Length: 454
Image 1 (cartoon, helix red, strand yellow):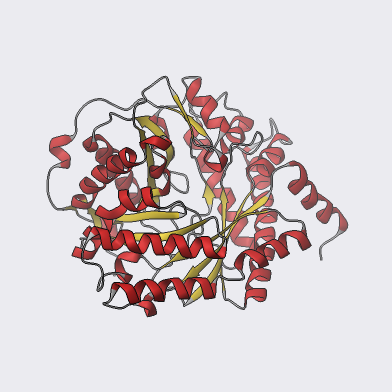
Image 2 (cartoon, helix red, strand yellow):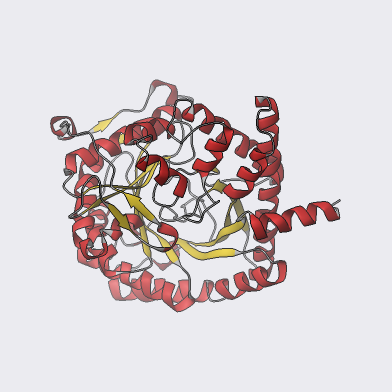
């Protein structure tokens, strides 16, 4: 039974602590759109997206107004386009045409982003995969709403190092093609290990091939709520701290569950999952780093940070799974730099480095996220950073990702302004020693021994 006190508490979370539903994401399968004629394929894709998503934004706004719960984004994810376009697309230019179709459809229905310009290459690349990957820089430069992701590895299959090497080149080229916007294209490009099929968050969302024809996934976020709760138990034991975070995560997830079920009912589309991810924004008071500081750290990055983040991530998941039978996606704590004012402050104070962020990714929900680095960083160094993060995911049986932005024309000591939810970021220093000969090796890193569970 929900009582008045709990209703009042939820209202305060929304009004004063930045609690929101970060996104309602409609997943759409495009497998039935496949054709070997590019013109037909483009029409099929456009028609299906615009038909299935025509009420998504309207329903999102209705729920927002009726329940008083902010719903920041309405988004679409689609089947990885490397699969959908394999028969019709014979060149990178053909895939750029598909990206433009996705962009046009997204504009037509009024969503913020559309994800799924993606390839799944954890064990090897087909010709279609290679074509799509090589088209990414041009596709992201030519569109505003399209997001791209590539899954390069998994615990079960290992890491495709040929794809890792190629993605270092692609990140560099994407930065160069969008240099007039401070290399913003790289903010719409993420590489994964163990990518989930039901992630509602961009830039990594795609509609997995194991999903149904359509599904509603919701991402809910409340770093400010958790920070406020943690501030009330200063000096208390770890048991009290854990219980506080877990109970708070439960309440936040119930808000997401409510919105997800209501959107599912009104759109007559199956409910998929609630992703409870503490996803920060540049707004003051909406920071994961501030939660860590509230636990007792001077800055995120100080000794003890990895332990504090591990505690936070685990209790968020435990609270979430009690609140909904279908918690999925990434669910935990995000640690992007540009989108989190506390992280930015820690970098500027000299407390948080790229290497410390990498250590933190061993225990959080995603990986190296929205990190600006010098524009002259070599493609091999970028591939090396990607390879390290893929290895963390592979060995630890968890999702990890890299969304890194080599800002053309800028170096350490400067900063970059992306605007909106993407925020701003100081350019972070990168280890200058070479890994070129390692990255140039061909083939793949095999799966770890603990992957053999059959």
